[in-house]
Every structure is written in C-alpha cells, then in structure tokens.
Amino acid sequence: MNPAIMGELIGLVVVVMIFSIPIISIWTRHRKEVMQMQVNSTAEKAAQYAASNKALEDRVAVLERIVTDRGYDVATQIEALRDQRRVEELLVEPRAEEKI
Image 1: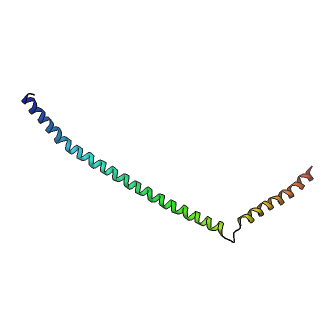
Image 2 (image 1 turned 30 degrees about the vertical axis):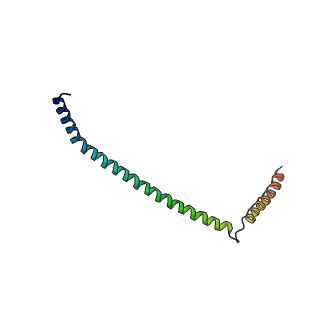
Image 3 (image 1 turned 30 degrees about the horizontal axis):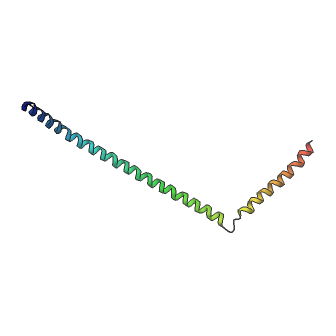
C-alpha cells in the first residue's frame, strides 16, 4: 500500500477511536444503569410475591385449623343443611297441591 494512504488511514482510525471511546463509555454506563433498575424491579416483585405468599399461607393455616378443629364438625353441619332443605321442600309441596 501507498505510505500516504496508510498515513491517512491511520489518522482516520485515530479520529474514529477518539470519538468512539466516549460513546462506548456512555453506552456501557447506560446499560449498567438499565440492568440495575431491572435488578431493583425484580427484587421488589420478589418481595411482593413473598408477602402475598405469606398471606396465602396464613389463610390456609386458618382454614386447616378450622377444618381440623374437633368442635367444628363439617359433616354434621352439611347434613343439617340437607335436612333443613328436605323440610322446606316438604312444606312447599303441600301448598302447591292446595292451589290446584
């Protein structure tokens, strides 16, 4: 290659490098800030999910305690409701026959 062209090419490379180094530095700093914001956002979401999960665990514990409590007989209460419906159905049927 011609030495004059090489000199110009080297000058061009130097100029490009002079301008590209600050641009790369700014871009790298920007990427770092964006990644830090993503990390902070992810940490906040994780804390919210943990709090929500804790609340759900507490609710399940209460329900388990209610269901397994000896004084709370679910089957008896369900049967009582069924019996009450049967009585109501029997009371409604004679009234329907009286209207006919």
